[in-house]
Length: 322
Image 1 (tube, rainbow, N blue to C red):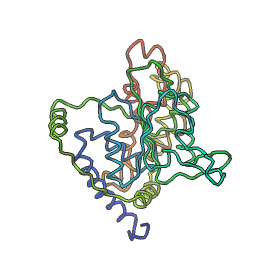
Image 2 (image 1 turned 180 degrees about the vertical axis):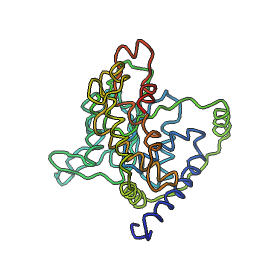
Image 3 (image 1 turned 180 degrees about the horizontal axis):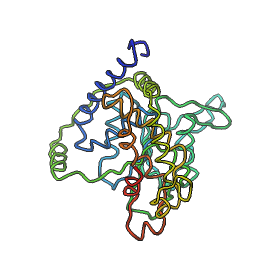
Image 4 (image 1 turned 90 degrees about the vertical axis):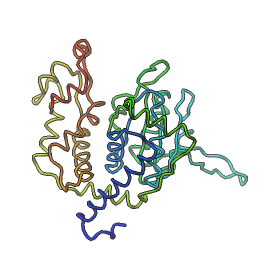
């Protein structure tokens, strides 16, 4: 696949075409949610993972399944429950007929893994998935197994029910490139959804890409050149989130108890590169950094009591920092 295009410019043009075709295929099944689809595809091409927060019934599972089909990738879904064990995710060793240990792979051995309601399971089980996300491999009984590439985790959380949940610690939240908030459809979109889902006819989604093509485009994103002023803007924005430091913004000192780490700066640049390519540009500018700033910083900065008392949202704080 890497030899298909004579130059990176040809590869970038092909990515834009594939991206438009992907959106059309996904649009056969998913009504609306254009920004969520854009950001999910963007994170796949950036080799990132996504935490999707939304109330039940907003088609989160259908969205991920549809994206997986359109990308030509294998898909597995893990329903996280309080009694889920790490072996239910990564797999387990069994004794076969020849009295030899044999490893049975778990659902994490897929290209796209939907971790449904990740905050419903204890930290030990959450950690099994988060290790796979970070290392792209898992270790069982001292033996390491590489996961299939491309590998992408989309975890969901329900923002309403907090009974019996185990919220992800900040260090683990940091593993996710994006935190996307899935909202209710508009009135017209909901009418389209009801019309298309109550007639007993399902639209088939065609595979637009192969795993090799996705791996090629992921490497292409990494090779995108970035001007120094864009690097400086991204790092400066993250530095502004850290209260009571040299570059801290007034709003950070007033409303934040904790700022974002260096991984936020890295993701801002990678996300800006991917956003530039998907919108037909060969290099990112400051607008591309601003486009990805909210979903990247949303789960990396922590509001203090003053912000909560005054009703200042995380999104409002991030807008001030731009």
